[in-house]
Amino acid sequence: MTKIICFANNKGGSGKSTTCASLAYAFSKAGKKVLLIDGDMQLNLTLSYFSEEVALEIAGGDKNLYSAIKEQKDLTDYIYHTEYDGVDIIPSSTLMSSVEFELFTKWQREFILKKMLKPIVDSNVYDYVLIDAPPTLGCWVMNILCASDKIILPVEASPWGLFGLANMFEFINQVKELSPSLDLLGVVVTKVDARKNYFKQTMETLKETEGITVFENVIHLDSSVEWAQDNSKPVGSYKKSSRSALEYKALADEILAIY
Ligand SMILES: Nc1ncnc2c1ncn2[C@@H]1O[C@H](COP(=O)(O)OP(=O)(O)OP(=O)(O)O)[C@@H](O)[C@H]1O
Ligand SMILES: [Mg+2]
Image 1 (cartoon, rainbow, N blue to C red):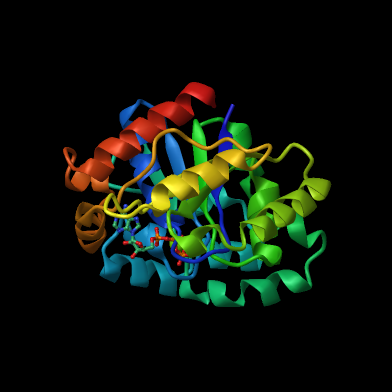
Image 2 (image 1 turned 90 degrees about the vertical axis):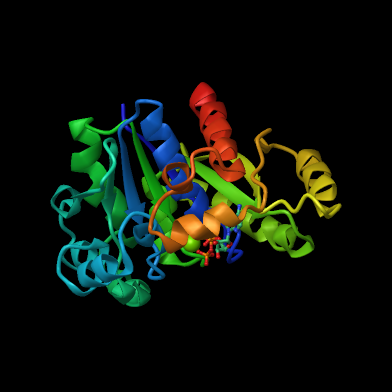
């Protein structure tokens, strides 16, 4: 059965897109077939697999997530292969800035993405669908959550990384009223700076929070992440021996062991 996981946190810059892109590559190396969906107008997930030139050309064309939503089409026709076996992607568009407006007039507007994804799920071609959410909490992110089985919540190891997390948990609980089977798979701590103490405090605070799983494997700050993004590659492909590539591989193994 195809499992659908989204990466969500309304806190910007917490590592959602990096984690989504890196785990997709690590999952594929573990023999899984993965479909990525870039749900953000910033195109960061798309840019992790395609050059800026290609990403912008797709974003301006009529085969991207936004054009599919506009027509409420079966998403199967919007899939692109990447250069990696086992990783396909539905790229985003900068026009996703209007997605809230687009959804507003639609019938059962929280479930548009779920319906559009159904043929892909039913075809059982993919082991995992990984969806990158934007840093917002509107109807579009509700769509992403309602289309997902599980949520992975990346949290930056910084004082403000934890601030506002309660709002995110509250939002998840509200969406669970619409989609009762939705679950938080776990929280992953990202951008850990080994020189600072915040990490220990972040882990302690998270572990004291009732009802959540905190992944054992954390992701440290690593310049390879930025170089990989600059080269439109997931970090595992850009530099397989880098700290972050190894950490994302370990995190992928931890996730695959439980889900
Ligand atoms: N492990 C890391 N080491 C170094 N830089 C990182 C790491 N993880 C993420 N970054 C950088 O931090 C920034 C934010 O990361 P990312 O875009 O993945 O977060 P996001 O939660 O998707 O952001 P947004 O909320 O804007 O969508 C990016 O510039 C990225 O290059
Ligand atoms: Mg992002």
